[in-house]
Length: 372
Ligand code: COA
Image (tube, rainbow, N blue to C red):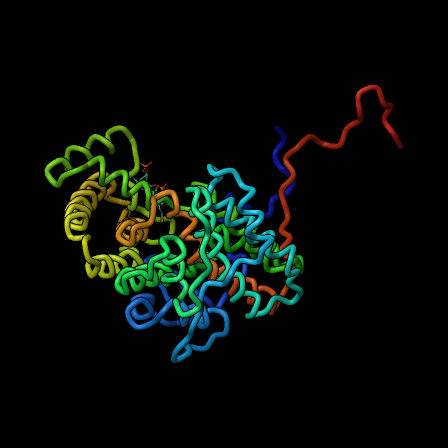
């Protein structure tokens, strides 16, 4: 094929390309630091709540207190969830609920903090309702007193969650709230840049997060530890997996070259959870072996523990079924997605990059004489 005429720089996957500006999260991969509007993630997890973090992301202000309960589901959303097959992907159920909410409420341009709040508080109710419906159980109304994470657990189980479990899931929500220009956030910003509505942007983001290259799989960490089974088996299991060219789940990251600060924060949370001691003992021992083996095999590539490793501990510890893990991550990311929608709209410019054409040169259709 002829050499492309267009010689402008091109980076597959937009890797390393600056595609916007944000004042929301700073992801410092080299040093393993993550801040939301300048505040370190570890401090936000230790001293804040998801409701405060969401307000911080949406408004730029740190409120002394904040209350963000789950919203009741509008009847058309419930009708749509009831119409889904019981084996529908939970992420599809969440996207459907968001889409129906958008069709009913028709959120206008420009997007507002109230719209962001409404969508973020709808999502846990929608996911919990779908989880119950697929098991043949009726959804229940949210408890307006409970915060988002606790309210989600309540709507799943009909029991007011243990405060420690609610706190642990809230901490997980904080670590998952925002992470720069990842694929789903970028998708939301592209959609917003056309002056489309916030529900469409979040639908697009959920669609992007559903892909296995993005949504992550803490459930695979659970399977991995289950297969390893005991500390004594860890070394052999890991060697064999690496010999087969497999990847260890919960290790490595595109951006972080140091220990993922979210993993460190969630490990502390998991250590404080009841009933996790045995699982954590195995997880910590396996992590030590895995880090040693990865360092031996990739001396030039820093492969450290990522957020999924200890997210698995927290999500399992609060009793969530593993197939709800990716959609639960989507619930947490709502604050970040919608904050990016607001940020994009506040200084909007249509996102419309160029593409390098590599197809045939201009030519005639078969049987048609060369024109002009
Ligand atoms: N286990 C074993 N080897 C790994 C690894 C892992 N978890 N992550 C990366 N590597 C190896 C690769 O095989 C590659 O080796 P090679 O150079 O011999 O081919 C080298 O390290 C670089 O890999 P690369 O794919 O370029 O790393 P990346 O930084 O672009 O990939 C991930 C990032 C997250 C996709 C990757 O680390 C991974 O697949 N991790 C496991 C899944 C996971 O935990 N995902 C959640 C992420 S939050």
